[in-house]
Amino acid sequence: MELYTDIYYIQRIQSGDTASFACLLDRYSRPVHSLIYRIVANQEDAEELVQDVFLKAFRNLSGFKGNSSFATWIYRIAYNTAISATRKKKREFLTIEDGQLDQVTEDDLTGLYGFNGEEDLLGELEAALDLLSPEERGLILLFYMDNKSVEEIAGITQLSSANVKTKLHRIRKKLYLLMIKIKGE
Image 1 (spheres, rainbow, N blue to C red):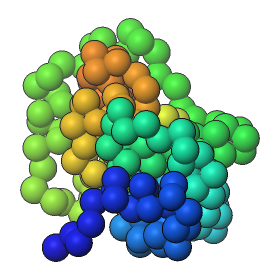
Image 2: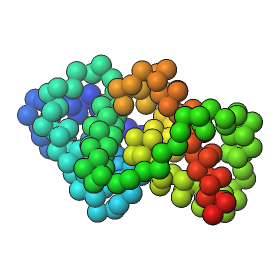
Image 3: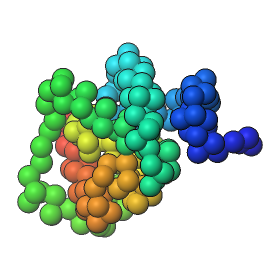
């Protein structure tokens, strides 16, 4: 049971009780770490980036206007920090032509994603996720692993809801093609 809301702690911090930030840190450090780790795929980098995220959040708390929930605001900082860090590393990611994506049908996707936890398929999915760009991996994981709604993802990524839906649809198709390729190797 939550004793106090995020807004309560934010108001206390803004009034000078900086120790109240520890409550927000306790509440959000695990989900923020989880998001960042899934994007950067490196434990040490994720731990360092989590510290960066909370430092940025603390320094910019005066900029939090309450237009979104604090959770969305901190997730936005985490997402952007993780994406920026991966861009600096300049890892190469597999690209798939739009024509190939257009050939994948909804039936193809349903057939592939409608599995019952088969370990081989889960391994192929993890391998395919590693081949996605950080932005793609972040979007798909926010939706499927963190159970964020399209609207919440739009708030986090600052994309339109329609754009999030389109990107998720294309990423699912890309995952399908990647998994087919992995299965054939």
